[in-house]
Length: 190
Image (cartoon, rainbow, N blue to C red):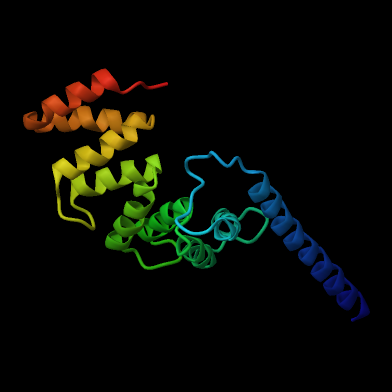
């Protein structure tokens, strides 16, 4: 019985140390992040941005099982906290949770809501995903014009799949040919 108690005590100390390491690493990463990072924005005060970054980092680690047991429900809770600060990356991540039904009920309308917020802050992946939702009519009314709009924004930020989708849209619906032709000439893909 004593051996079991000693093991439990050592395990708790190790787990506490690992949790502290995870949180201190997140804090160091958040404090050293470049201020000009386009995707590292929040619609609130600078102090809230630091808090939101930490909450998003914890959510990411929970979703990936990075240093902690994988737990999508807990990840969604952390993403929600960070998204409520207006943190664009968390808004994108929360949209992913809703789209795939990871830790929350699958809800394409809520995915569209969160991706719209992230897309408005310049998250190219959110812009691309939002274009897909409008193209397919998932969670939003089908609208090729809005699909094209969001894909053009994503393509302008270097998303090559968005450029490909614009070309596909032009083939399927010739009325969008001009948009795709202009984008092909103006979008520089690295």
